[in-house]
Each structure stands twice: as structure tokens, then as C-alpha cells.
Length: 252
Ligand SMILES: [Zn+2]
Image (cartoon, rainbow, N blue to C red; front, side, top):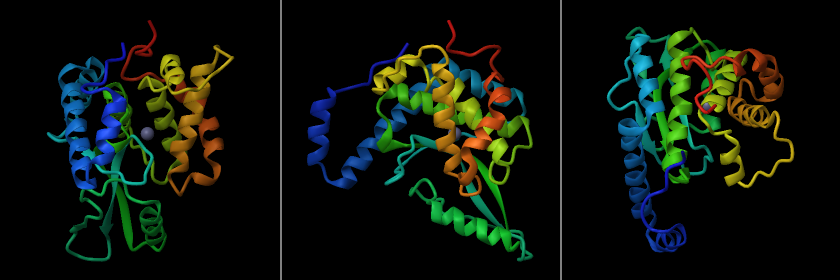
């Protein structure tokens, strides 16, 4: 069941927000987001189940796996992994950490620059298992918890396979299909709340999963050109793969 968003009515909140200085607004958003995350960890059975499964799979989540960040102009609800640059030319083996401050999602141009460097084989990239929620784009607590489940599905996929979603676009398409499908983000009720009218009930969920997975695949500059093809190629196999659930968690 969708939970109610907390506190003051939306219209009143919006007016109050508009009058606040930017820094104060951001601090308030962070506070709200962090409360959503805490509630998710303590009360959301799907979130708790995925945490348990990660531990059982040998990937015990770190203390602060999920962080709330200011994502500025990015329209995402959240993300998984921070692309980290490892200098393979240097002999120290130190990792050069990039953009790990609270500025949130790396911009496309940052990732493009890193990918270009990787092609010149001076660096190797790896994904740091870390989840962030974009605090200013969370509509309510339900949305925050769906975003957490979405990113935790990516964490499960990273844990159980040698998935390489940076370079392997089929891997990326597969994990996005699973995350969109299993998070409840494409539940027909949610789609109606988001104002997407549809006349075709049957196959609606699958269409929504496809549409959203394509958008996510497009966010990777390596995969953007053929996002639709990658999603199509992975769809049949990955849409019916409900691991670690026995069956789709939203089917009643
Ligand atoms: Zn995703």
C-alpha cells in the first residue's frame, strides 16, 4: 500500500519552500529524505528483505549505503554507484576519487571525460557500490522507498554477477529492466498517479518497464546510441527474472 507523505499539505509546503533561501531549502530536503531512508530501513519489508539477501550473498551493505544528495539539475530520483577513476599509470595504486562530495550524480560530461581517458588506457573505471537518492526530486515517502528498492536491485545484481554496466550495455539494460520491474515504479496505480493515462491494461507494466529502462540506459554515454536495441535484446530474459524474490513482489 502506498504510504502517505508526511507533514504539511503539499500546496502549503510549496509556498513555504518558495520563500526559503536556497541553502535552507536544501537542508530541509536532506532532512526529509534522510527520514524517508530511516523509515525505509526500519519499516519497509522489501527494503529489509533486500538488505538481508545482500548479506546472505556475501555483500553485507556498509553502514551508510544509502545517502541523500543534492542532484541539482539532474532529474533522477536516485542512482547506484559512483564511477571511480583508478590511475593505472601511477605506481602507488592510490585511487583518485572524483566528485565524491555532496554534488551528487556525476554529470554526463564528467563520465564522458573519464570514458575518453579509459579508451586511451591511462585509467580504469570501477563502480563504487553506493546508493544515492536525489533529495529534491522525491515526491513522497513511497517514491523514496521505490527508489531505494530500485537501487538495491542494482546492488544485488552487482553482487551476484560480474556485471559491468559501464562497458556492457546488455548488462546495464538487464539490471535496469529488473530494477524498474521489481521496484513497483511501474505499478499501474503509480502510473495513474503520475498522470499517464493508458487504454491498454494488458502489457502495460511491460511497456512502462521498457520505457523507463531505455531512459536509464541512455544515461550511460557508452550505451546511449542504441538504448532501445539493448533493452529489447535483454527484455525477455530479464523481465521474468525476479531474483531474489520468488515471484514479482507486487503481484497479489
Ligand atoms: Zn537504475
